Image (tube, rainbow, N blue to C red):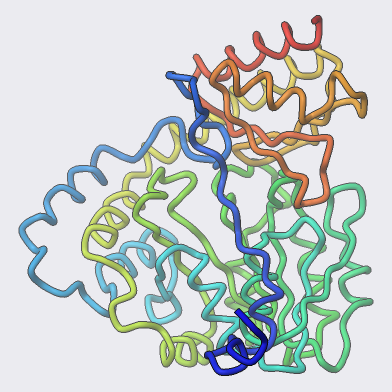
Length: 369
């Protein structure tokens, strides 16, 4: 096509073509029959039986629109988390909510800050809003509050903090989060992305509820894709000041969540026993895997989540790329994290007992070969 023809067709707005599309974790390997997918931080325990039952029961309502206010799910979240229902907004995954926040609070010429190991969706949605992404270096895989504050300018409108982080698995203590908030101008929106909050067993961690409750410029986002085992249904929620939920609601799609997701999510968050079981399972196997990787001479970034960042030597035959290739040939799919700045590391989701033991056995063979 010549330049004249291109000039006559519709063109995307500025910034869109600068976006590198998000690439999800790999799910298949050609020529390998049995696969253990450990690339997407999915729960090896799956969804609550109550959530599955609630999901199946929605087949009677396929001819009706879902509740546009998502009342049942918001009420369940409010009751189980001790929150005001009016401060809760649900979405098609927390990804949608992050995008809505960008569309609501960012405009061309504005800046959004996040760290170099933050969720790639932050950059995508910032650019989609026509704003400028400002990426701040972390300090040894941990968010550096002082570096974030130093990056704030009069153009800054949003600061995204992934806590705990992905793919690092590290976290920022609540006192540091409060210090960050205290150093921000009041017109800057602090977004605390707490997708893995339920897994954290640290006394100095807080997902963000307390800070949202006490502030006018803090939002916390959460997801049902991890601990609740419902990634297929795309359920996310945010807790925010009323003026934020009011603003975001004005651009939110009227039926942005389907009836099956609403029903399953409502049942899932009420099943505290399933959540506790998933947490206990994760804690046990995260420690076991960390110990086993360490015995193999591999460095593991200390993690409070349901995944581990495993570092490989920068050598031609034992590199992360070679390890990934070998593991895939055995049916174990981990996540390459080169795009997050870790070319010599693999991120492994905590999987089933069979998968966890299998990865260690396969890597033992690989490293000895």
